[in-house]
Image 1 (cartoon, rainbow, N blue to C red):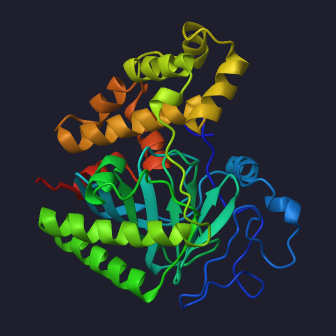
Image 2 (cartoon, rainbow, N blue to C red; image 1 turned 30 degrees about the vertical axis):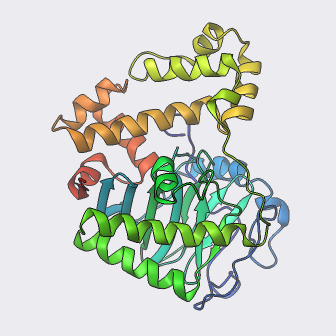
Length: 344
């Protein structure tokens, strides 16, 4: 287990080599695997029947051997975050309030694990994650090279403004995205500006075009009816109170039992109602708040990593660093080094 209560996501029942799934080099149709996890031919289906549980089981084996994940380039702006990461270590199950797109750029293929299956991130395959959907990155087992990924964290308000009201909400119709020639060209363009540093106008236009292509494709096989994102007005008042309590006490000695009690709920009812209405557990929601605040302080101040960790309630810099690596993917010092702010 890691700080924050998460477990490392690692492959549990598939291998590379002669009997493994081979990632296609061309833009073949992405597999529709929302209900059925991807399996190595001949593997027992029960081995991956619940990806979250299998990840928790193998977490006891400890971190994957190899180098650390590395931030190559990170840009923050009105759009959210646009990053290029080099990754060869698994992460814990986590979530973001932003929409999330992950594209293969080079190196070894990888996987995205979600409670309903595993999806390849490879030549011809990308993934789309809606806000507050649980997920984690898994490197290819026994890979000799790290995976290089273009990863977008898309601000929902920005997406709505850029679309001039065309989109009700940044919720994707399905997870797997086929990397068509048009999407591949847009990925290459986005990769170039993330590495080189663009003007704000070109960044917005490029990232919106890429996000919009993936958004539209995700709904093509589902139909014209697109659900509206659940608004705060539809959330039970006791859950709304718990959200406020969690936000106010993010750096304090917070206990979820106390939050449930102050919200007027029993612990079991609190966990059930919270997950039904927010989409994640209270633990993952609290981890997300801490992760967001950590990123904000790392990129918007010159405070030391130790002080930031203490302010967020961590007992030491090492505990905070392990939490940040498990949720963001790399050490906080590495993230700070690679990050640039795009103004305008």
